[in-house]
Amino acid sequence: MVVAEVGIIPIGTETPSVSRYLAAAVRELEASGLKCSLSALGTTVEAESVQEFYAALGRAQEAVFELGIGRVYTIVKMDERKDVEERSGEDMVRSAQRAGDS
Image (cartoon, rainbow, N blue to C red):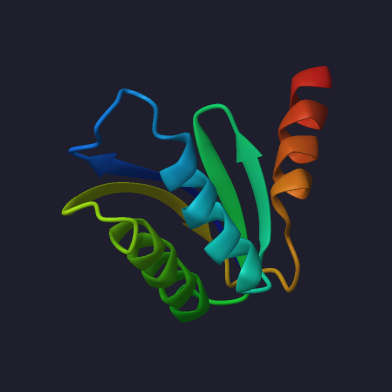
């Protein structure tokens, strides 16, 4: 299971706002069928494999290029576990919260 936080940053936009570019990227990530959670500073994506994640990420970046951007800067933080069958981002948060309660 892969849980990743992604920041896709278009470089060279006409205004400081990047909402329309990010919306296109998130739409593409969601269209991939992967679970996505948008936050103020990035998007969390859950995938069964690294290959599945990277394929979706590539399509998301391409969606931004298709809007006329010549450069995209992408930041990825990824956690991959092969020692458990299923572990969502929500599971990770609950685990940390339980540890804090101890």
